[in-house]
Image 1 (cartoon, one colour):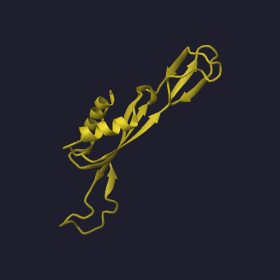
Image 2: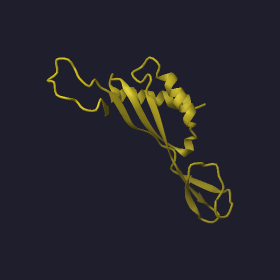
Image 3: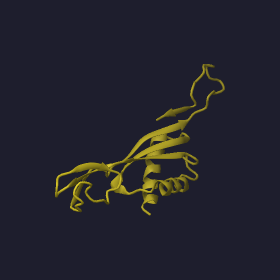
Image 4: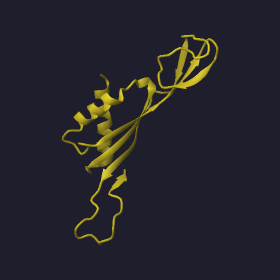
Length: 130
C-alpha cells in the first residue's frame, strides 16, 4: 500500500502551498506506472490530513497514461494499464515511456466571503486556487 506514502508526500506539498490557510480541494496528476489505487489514495489522504489545514479536503486524482512501445513490431499507444501486451502483435517485449510523474496541480483554499472591518467590497467566490 504505497498510497499512504504518496498521500503523506501530497499532504506535505499541499500544506506548503496553503501556508496555514484551510484547504478545500487538491488535484494530483499521477502517472499510470505508479499504479495508484484512487480509492486507497483518497482514504490515505483523508487519514493523513486529520488535524491539518487539509482536514476534510477532497483529493482529485488524474491518472496520466504511459506510452507503450512494442520492441517486436514498433507499435506504440497510450495506456492506463502498463502491465499489458502489444495490441497489434500480442508481444510482451514492451518499453514504457513516461507515466511516472507525480504532480500537485492545484490547491483550492477556503476564504471568508466577508471579513468584518474590511472595506465592504464583495470578495466573490469563496474558493480560490493557490
